[in-house]
Image 1 (cartoon, rainbow, N blue to C red):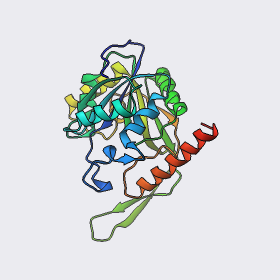
Image 2 (cartoon, rainbow, N blue to C red):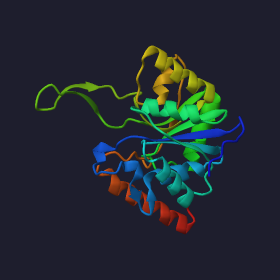
Image 3 (cartoon, rainbow, N blue to C red):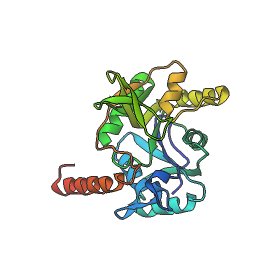
Length: 247
């Protein structure tokens, strides 16, 4: 199943599945729990693989899960070209760095959270096209809710200020980058001791631009316990669309 070859014209997807998933609860990290008949991770990989531009994958997993993930993908997604399955680090940023070291030659690198199982091919391709224009792009949604800053210094969580939401976007994945730019951003972060929860923040720290691609509310991240039934509902809806020929 391992495929080390490829072309520098390719887009390689780094799927980050190395977290502990503690907020969802349970002994098994959320990305390895089964949604329907396969791991949450597998749904994310298969969704990305439907985008024509994505050629190969590097999967970054929680240490100790490497062989189980290789077996799962070989059984459930044998058509997916996986270059490597590697262990992650202490933080998400470290895990992406591990993935970068294992990634084969490519023109662009796509980074996606395994906890987002439902990106559409159209969404993925839009992000790739934007990255080809700008060098870096991320799927995002304009914030619609009122935002307040909270004072959490006491037992009660009290609102302390209302924030301006104009121009504020909630960042999703996939995020896509010129391969050399993403590597430069991570090297710079390591040299400067910078920490971020996503890769676009590291690119911004270089003074480079990131294009925002309008995302979808269906592109949920499974994080809290209530997200699991939401994901199951979306999966059923998607399967019904496929049966009707609408997707």
